Amino acid sequence: MINVSAKFWFLTVLVGQVIFSFYIIAFYYANTLAGDIAQYNRVMPAGYIENDTYGNAAVVIHVLFAALITIGGLLQLIPRVRQKIPAIHRWNGRLYIAIAIIMSLSGAFMVITRTDKVAGDAFGHAALMINGLIIIVCAIRAFGYARQRNFALHRIWALRLFVAVSGVWMFRIGLMAWIMFHGKPVGFDPATFSGPFLNFLFTLVYILPLLCLEGYLRAQSNGTVLNKTITASWLAVLTLIMLAGVFAAAMGMWLPRIGLA
Image 1 (cartoon, rainbow, N blue to C red):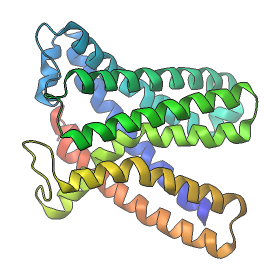
Image 2 (tube, rainbow, N blue to C red; image 1 turned 135 degrees about the vertical axis):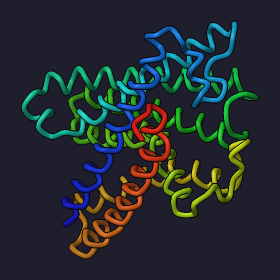
Image 3 (tube, rainbow, N blue to C red; image 1 turned 180 degrees about the vertical axis):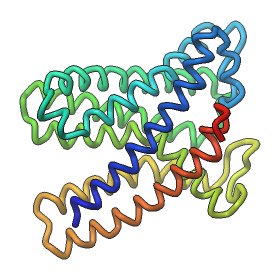
Image 4 (tube, helix red, strand yellow; image 1 turned 45 degrees about the horizontal axis):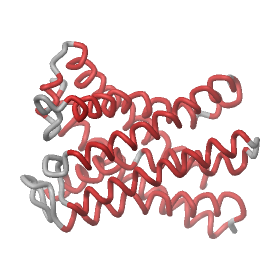
């Protein structure tokens, strides 16, 4: 039962992140190739700032790598790729770790240099910085254990890295699920993108998924039948909420921005 719930979770993540990657390619890649990165400002506050060469470069690097790291992370979790094509798993893993670190640093640079322009308040900015730090730590540990050929610990840290990297995506689907449930923004100001609900969501998506992962790993490895049943149940409920968020984000945010909804 716990394996069925885990597969349901991964399928939801797979579909949601593929749609997210398609949106990134269709919007950000297309506008970048067209030499019109000012279009970023349609969906990203201060995505492009005139004469801010380094800041704009950080933004471009960040958004262009977003699709690569999303697709790369999904590939790393597919058992057939690991088992049948281990070379792809190894080299894609190295690329994934490198991009994760680069994106964390570029994201931190954007927050630090554009504090007054990046959406959100100080709490949200701090949460993003902490998430970036978590990503870097997980990336270093996952790479280190792979080099030591300690694949049991490598798997654990690689899963932690995937969950941490997915935090920004989870924030988006969590926000859209909340808005879909209420039918309007509740608990935050959409103009300033700040408020108690967003503070709660920032904390939730960067901490709860890691705690859930730890609970799942413990139950999978040495949990009792009851423990595995309880874990499978809450994982299924969490996945249903995520599925609602994926639908809301796709239909209310990603697809409309590229003219498909």
